[in-house]
Length: 460
Image 1 (cartoon, rainbow, N blue to C red):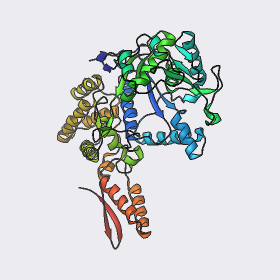
Image 2 (image 1 turned 90 degrees about the vertical axis):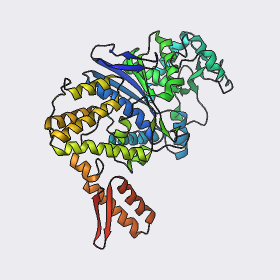
Image 3 (image 1 turned 180 degrees about the vertical axis):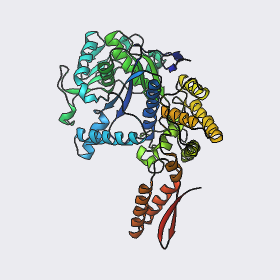
Image 4 (image 1 turned 45 degrees about the horizontal axis):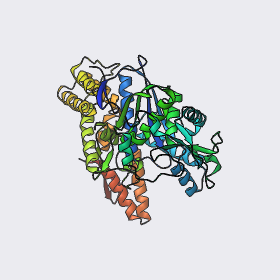
């Protein structure tokens, strides 16, 4: 069975074949980088990490571009609040992002463009749109896109212009001919720092958010490429506007497939910074090991809502423990390449080829683990580990995982936390001491205090 992907543009599963045989070009809208990444951001990056891993496992060469937005209203505001330069802020947050998602096993993209590096390409694209009558210079100095002049606007969101107009909640801003029009170039404001301004034929200013991605994906992947991805919240207006800009300029389809991952929810509400119900990746990793968090995200289908809770993470850890238990029974045989004719591998492949069906693929891993438990087959254990690698899991040492009660927590780390707890108790910071004990307990580590000191053991 060949790979089928759900295309948001057609609202249907479609057979996938790349425009260039053997080579997949994929662009994913990345982070606006002004703060630490939360678990919702991890879900997006994890979804497309699995996509690119499976494409590679299927024999494709993949050029994966995931951008960074490093100039934006929120970035400027945060830099001013902290009294640092925009570059200092974005460099700090990019480094933090790389550290956090690296712990989760999210592989770096082939190319990671920063918006500020592509301003000339953005200006060129705006010039093309103005030349075609799709952009106009407003009285307030901005350059706006004229939405009603682009045929097909709304095809990604599935809404007509009249429906979109009826849902418009804000008044027409100064200089806009229509509330649906959006800004391509923002004129400079006196209070903005010099590093947030570029000179151009349109006056001093900076790019709008939507034009950034159109310019970056065009510069790195060409006018038309295979997959454009991102979170479901970007479908409208961001991706709709990208289509209008790129296709308005080139007259060619921007992407063959549009792929969107589902939200992370807490108490049936979308996790987001604006709602204040978000957990940073670092918050979560203070309590749960990275592989458990990865498994929690991966075992849900990328398009489904992901319900975040400690209970679900605890369940994910116990499930992952069952898989590692199978691998601990016998040393897995080295698997140079997966034999896709094997019944377990064939089922795994069929699941992944049906729109990256990770829930069904994970079910195959549990069936395979059951066979390993019964047969003690090194070959089946090797296959289990190799298939897990397609999802970025089961690559750790099984005994270390099981001894710690969670992946990746080793003796040195446990002893360091015991020492930190002892120091907190000595300083009479009992709240911190309790926090460390509870954090270790959540990772399956039980502390035993005695007159001789503190020891630990794995929870049963």
